Image 1: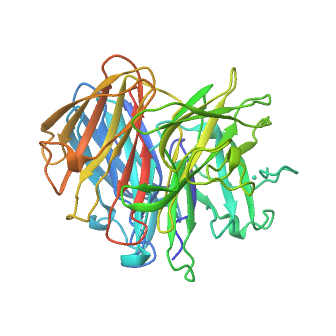
Image 2 (image 1 turned 45 degrees about the vertical axis):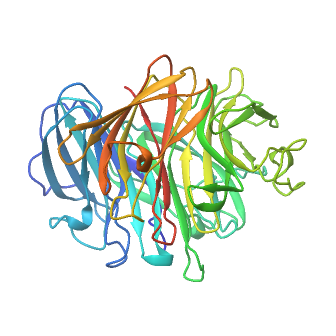
Length: 471
């Protein structure tokens, strides 16, 4: 079964006939868009997308959650969630929702009345060796220009549901989308795209849109199907941060994990980015200077090869000129005066996950969904990768989903510019088979954070999402 394709959602006012209860007419404090939500899509073991919403404000808030069908844009369900306390999270599992039809795909709009919110979506399908998992962040505002650094068509088995990396003429794919609705683009069926090709994509629209990208290698003939998801990018920065990258590493039990990093230039002029790696826990920097990257184009860095040039001289396990040693790292990418973004593809022989490098370091980050052995000892555990930007210490607050209770306040110290892994299984005071909302505060400076979501039940038990900087 193929994963649900990449979705583009209009963030305008809904134009389809509304068959749901009347919506709250008060102006919301914040609105979050979830372009791709599914219930048993493809059958009983098909795609389901639990989503989690966290209150990032200082007062309680009320949520209004509206589900709109992909097929015709009609509203099929609207619910109210009352009194979500500050720092706490609410979760919805569409497979458990009797008011939603099965084998269906939705765009969802979450409005918050009282406080700011963030949201993360987990996309899951299959069982055993054919299980797949992806994760993406809800989008709080649309944009008329959205960048997608890594789109592929039958590229080493991967495709993502359109200017080639290697240069050449740009191509266009056009969709007309009603306000509030979503449509997908499947590269494998677009005649203007070429097999075996990697693209950097810019989505432009006359009205604001939100985009999520699902990249998958899961045809029926694939023995170990894998998939991962990332958000489209509305803004980059001169310096961006990646709390996790790997070269032939053992990522929490997944051996042979490697991260390719796709850096896209969002600026109007060419840029020459520098990428700097530091081992998890600290160590000296290893830096590489990339080629000149034209506006809207991208540069791919593959750590398995000398100077990151895929297909060139293969690096050994240890450090050598143009190569760093096998292991786990954090990184940053920068170019003076430039506007950069990057997609990070973290892939092992049996798993895949992806995230977007963070364009904003912050003193405070929110992580809506962090779990410890959820579903049993081999169930979902979600280590945090916490990167220092200017901070040397941070506090981590763990609030239990079930009642919003603050269970643990953890104090961490780390070397300036380094990154650490925080595994919920090793944090005293947390309990197994439990779900938490987490708030991280840099006590003396700024940090960046992502969450890697892992299970050990077989199949592609890996996904990741970016932490949310404080509004």
